[in-house]
Amino acid sequence: MSRTRKVYDVGSPNLRVSLYFQGCIGEVIFASNTIVFTLPDPRFPVLSNDQFSRREFLSTESLMAKQILIADDHEAVLQGVKALLQAIPGWEICGNATDGKKAIAKATELRPDLIILDYAMPGLDGLSAAKQIHELLPTVPIVLHTLYASTELNLAANKYGIRKVVDKKSGALISAVEELLSVAQP
Image 1 (cartoon, rainbow, N blue to C red):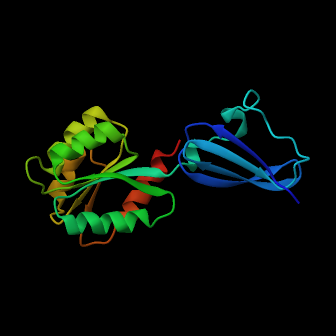
Image 2 (cartoon, rainbow, N blue to C red; image 1 turned 135 degrees about the vertical axis):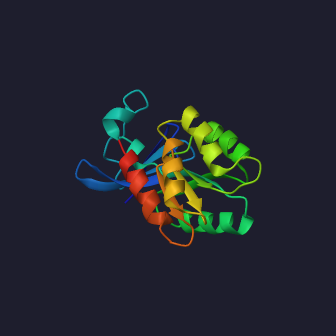
Image 3 (spheres, helix red, strand yellow; image 1 turned 135 degrees about the horizontal axis):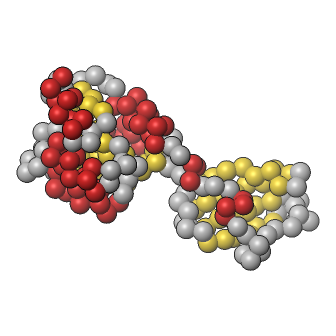
């Protein structure tokens, strides 16, 4: 049995879904800004570029990997958090920073779905960075990941646009990120 293939440029990130098309299972691969339709039998029609409508076919918004920015001045912690989070299907680390000023620049450039900031960073601490990021990107959830969690820090964090304060020793980072990303879903 031969296969039918058609490629469309739609500016999508990498993702793969199954397709049920006219009674047969096929596959749609979103990779490198293209859509590749693969159907098991050439007798089934494939849409032309003129007929293809992204909105009618599939909303890729909910299927795209959630982009996460991490800022921590300790390289080992940064790499550990990065490895932990990118192991979760549907999450992607889009960038990292080692201080508050770089975190603001990266957040502005990358516009992630969520930002994780260390509290104690050189130059500009996590609270000050969060305040500026929140002014620029008010809908992006920010998590303050710290060794210095306290009631006072929680109260201050809320004033700076931080949605969650997570103690680094608690192991609650994944659940906090899951919660905030699920709330941010359209």
